[in-house]
Image (cartoon, rainbow, N blue to C red; front, side, top):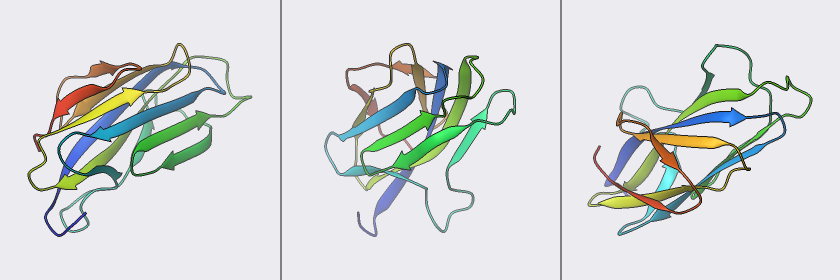
Length: 135
């Protein structure tokens, strides 16, 4: 990325996960380089958050982010109840980016929805879905 980077807030909403399952969201560029990010350094709040809908603790065995994927593994041995949580983070792209694509490679039964820049939630599945870049 360069000095002309632009950022886009993303919220991933995960539901129907059970302990021991893996959640993976994959990013693909369309017309310009794009990557997962913790957000802009100099422009107010940024970073990554994970939050449950009930405020309860969420037990994870792994949380990792690379340029093109976010991966979360819930811990075995936690409650057998269905888990719901959200992940807030950013995408970073070069100025002029127009679109990017996301897909879920999560374990069966896990529902992953995404909100881009505060837009309504949209379900992700195993096929790439293209989204416009509109910070």
